[in-house]
Image 1: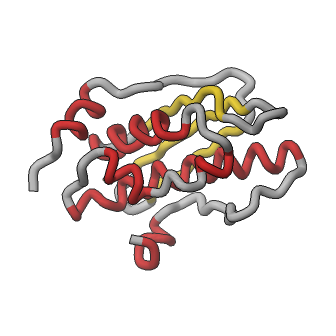
Image 2: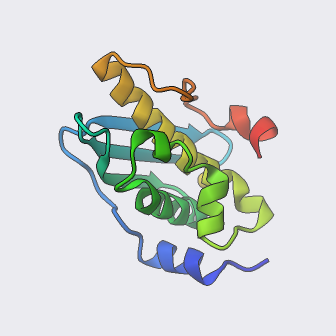
Length: 146
Ligand code: FES
């Protein structure tokens, strides 16, 4: 299966690449198998719980870049609760699919968002309903979640 036009677009022209200084939450996850790493930064409005900005850095494959780019677009402007709905499946759908061998790359994006939200919750001493403690290495999730 070839890559969709959307995947190619987000890979060649990734949105929201960079760092947010003093971010509300930062999450980093990796995949030991391929060695790819993704870091997600969230800027969250403490009063409304809305994600005002989201940036990422990915040291990884093309699909990891494209999925993190799309994931940042999907969580921007959303509430924390809505951001939890941005699963790897939702990211893949928004990208018109990924080749099966690249599905695990989208998990990196999902888990990086979760890790950043977890960091936010810890900093604010709150509990985000429905958010599980993220793993550092998504290889642990691959068998169960795809
Ligand atoms: Fe590692 Fe894609 S091959 S995230």
